[in-house]
Amino acid sequence: MKLLDSKNVIITGGSRGIGKGIAEVFAKHGANVAFTYNSSSSSAQELEDHLKTFGVQAKAYQSDASDFDQAQKLAEDILKDFGSIDVLINNAGITKDNLLMRMSAEDFDQVIKVNLNSVFNLTKAVLRPMLKQRHGSIINISSVVGIKGNAGQANYSASKAGIIGFSKSVALELGSRNIRSNVVAPGFIETEMTEKLDEKTVEGWRQAIPLKRGGQPEDIANACVFLASDMSSYITGQTLSVDGGMLT
Ligand SMILES: NC(=O)c1ccc[n+]([C@@H]2O[C@H](COP(=O)([O-])OP(=O)(O)OC[C@H]3O[C@@H](n4cnc5c(N)ncnc54)[C@H](OP(=O)(O)O)[C@@H]3O)[C@@H](O)[C@H]2O)c1
Image (cartoon, rainbow, N blue to C red; front, side):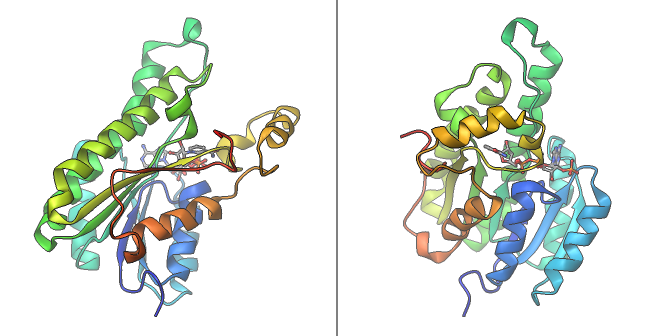
């Protein structure tokens, strides 16, 4: 018996990076995986095929998580295809970094819309089925900068802090229905999102981390496995930093 046997999971932004890592680790633990992407259709198709090799049900859906109606339609389609939704992982996210002096209103709004409105949209979309079945685990991917703040990331940090407040409120509202809501706050995880950064800066960050390395998508995925599984059935409203000790 695997930890996530027969659990049906939605992961937003599964086509690459952390979301892809979560999809792979979840499939290895026996979960059926529905994942979304925004534009990377060929890598999404490749991942769908790869996940099926673990003997689980898997399907990629093109769906813009920042669009309320698309999120509702997505949940309906997944319910038809998979039968139920046990776990939601809100992972889709973008950055549009700039110092506040130079940050445009459009770049502020866009980051809030993709990173924070998406969490509202998807949580609303899975609410009814989870209430009906009287169980569910919602895992929201925030960031250490949502806890600490970061120069040049006022928009991103605000969206990630918003996720923590949202998630705690959902935990309080839905605990009596056995729906849990938790946050994972990654530190520096080496993905395409961080590949754009200068190598010298990155090496400096690695050395400043107590565990002396950047994290890998699997590090985040393993924390999500725990929060999705019945091993965490008495844990809700929490924020788990997965950051090599960065915030310590
Ligand atoms: N990497 C880090 O160090 C780090 C640290 C802390 C937190 N995080 C958070 O972890 C999450 C994943 O980060 P990552 O590094 O894996 O990013 P990434 O490599 O840039 O991947 C982002 C994923 O989100 C999808 N996406 C973007 N906009 C979307 C939208 N509107 N609707 C649906 N999907 C959308 C992308 O799909 P397409 O491929 O189709 O564009 C892609 O699958 C984000 O929420 C990020 O803020 C990352």
